Picture 1 (cartoon, rainbow, N blue to C red):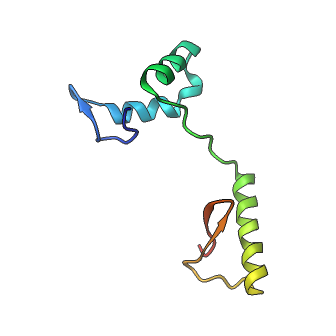
Picture 2 (cartoon, rainbow, N blue to C red):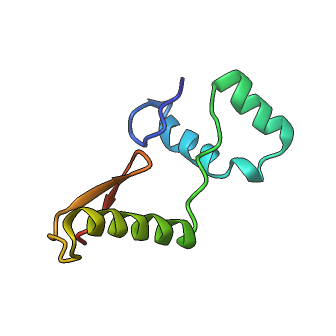
Length: 93
């Protein structure tokens, strides 16, 4: 399995981690054959899709509502986080 971070594996002067990360990021732009080769031979899969602004906004709103239900106010401490759907949301920033 290739690393997905730059600087971890270098062979013949080529940064394999950087290359693998680029392949994951641009996976949708590759041909079906290239995708198959990366997945089947090297075990590289597409990077997870980025969340939309609407999805991030909805998650932040859910975190604020959760905090408000528990604390009965929205004066959130600066470093506070909430856990929504298994993810940590930085609410105090």
